[in-house]
Length: 183
Image (cartoon, rainbow, N blue to C red; front, side, top):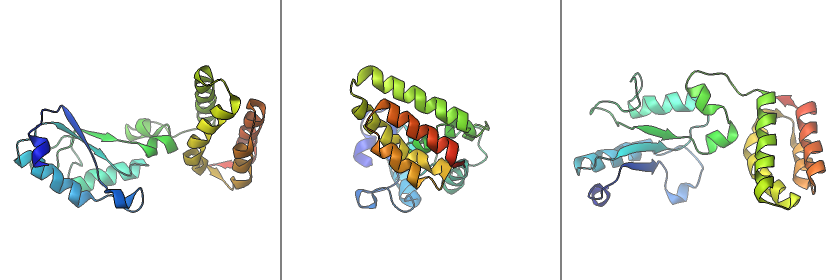
C-alpha cells in the first residue's frame, strides 16, 4: 500500500479477499481497514472503493457498520473511520439487478421486472452474437446468480441449461416463472 500511495490515482478498488479465498467465506474487513490506514498514512489520496460480498441491503449496512461509516450522509466518513467513497456491488448486482435501488431505499425486484431484464439482456446479446446457443451460454452465466429468486427451481433451471435454441430457452424461462415461487 505504501508503494501504491506513491502513484497518482483518482480511485482505488480494494477487494477484501486474497486469492486463496476465491469467493468463499467472509471478506477480510480488518485487513481491508489496515490496508486503507497504511495507504493513507503513506500519503495516498485516491478515493477508496470497497469490494466484497455485498449481496443485500443487510450486507451493505453490515459493511458500513464494520468499517465505521454507518450514519454518515455519504460513504466517506471522518478520519476516525475507514473512509470509503464507494462500494462495488459485483456479484450482488448479478444476483439482484435491483440491489442498487434497494440500497437507496427503493423497491425490491419483482418477477415482471426480472423477466423484462432477462428479455432485454437476451436481445442485447443477440445483437452482437449471431448463434442462439452462444447467446444462451451468456444467459446461463446470469442464471447461475439469478436462480436464487425461485423456490424449488432445479428441474426448470436444468431445462434452461439444456436449451439449444431461442424458442427452447424462452419456453424454459417461461416455465420457471410460471411454475416456481418467486422469492
